[in-house]
Length: 316
Image (cartoon, rainbow, N blue to C red; front, side):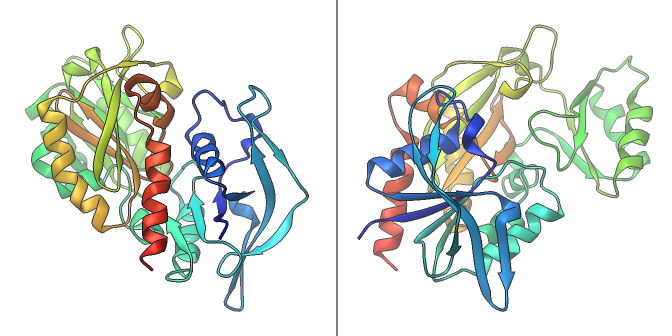
């Protein structure tokens, strides 16, 4: 039977065919004969127990500037009309995102939703590393100013960032002599009721921030993201550049520690961020880097992902 896949994502018209992970996943599914549908989160509806998506049948193509062709939208019953739903829209991880997770969670066990929305919802990216605290840099999560000041006094050079930020946005390094720590704390606390995350600065970030892709809890490969000179953020979205990198013993130890947690929670495609042998984030909402890993290592995480999906469907 033909595999039918609905992808809940941001519009794919502007996807970069050479680097976009959602495009790569769709392309890999198409190669094994899957029928593809694309829709945006605002096209998802719950009504009297029925969960639908106003979706576009899609064919992807590796053509820069024209990554997909679409047919007219149709209404899909996500419980009965498709085998798999991929939740691939970008953060922010806000109440709209959490609501989408709640609704998609209701499709179990009839439709396979990946990553499992129950554990996407309950495991935000900056909190997932708390499952393996021995592999993290020194970290504090709080709204208490006195606690943050004491942490800074202890570690001197720190990073401060919002707990639910993404793409390297609003990440600040505060050096020991910098007087902006207090104003930054006040700024963040004034914008949200959420805690902040403060971490000891890792000087190894100057050498890069490694993105490692795991498929069903197993490390596939990684690459290094090098920040612009004088910058502390290495995310590709803020100007970092990608370069090949092997996985070190420390990297593999982190993967061995976090991998079983991810597998048990149905987080099939995950990108973790490692700086100097320390785990900083577990990206499970809409992880990127699949094409870079394929290009640098020759291993194709997108193809591996669909092999896991087929195995899961065969065993249900």
